[in-house]
Length: 185
Image 1: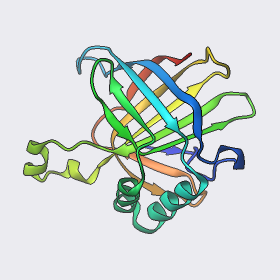
Image 2 (image 1 turned 90 degrees about the vertical axis):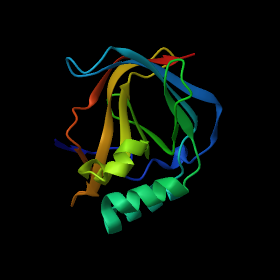
Image 3 (image 1 turned 60 degrees about the vertical axis):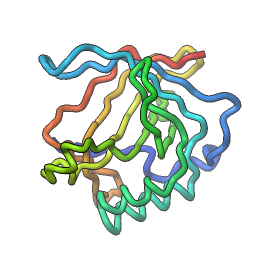
Image 4 (image 1 turned 180 degrees about the vertical axis):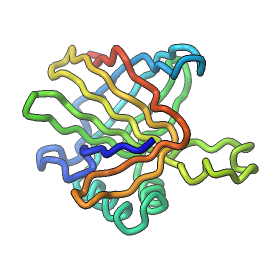
């Protein structure tokens, strides 16, 4: 499954340069797997800071020049900016976080990180290793009580199209739908 994502991996507005947020931004959601794939799972995303324009440019350059391998290398060099976790678990580091606000007032949030690779998967050396990135996309209404929707693309590879939009291809997985997305106060 392939989809184009015109998102915050293009240059973020100048005012969004990485700054420690006054306090971390937290979002909760219900992760809904495709039918038969598992239970609905509460997840939490915490953003300590938004990625800088320089980090965004490095990431886009890496994707443009080397595709997925370049993005993975660039992500691994970025500091942790937040976490993504099933509620009650330690979770995974978020290495890229960007937020833009559309003309409709909807905040579009993009999070990216390297995907955990289990021992069996690494040992098997299967095609799934070509999809080492996880991308989370949220659409949240403005305000402190913002609600919205989103998805987690668990195992993807990426490229940039001629419009400088990130194109993601999922590895044999449907995206995990995020329902009841809420900004926590």
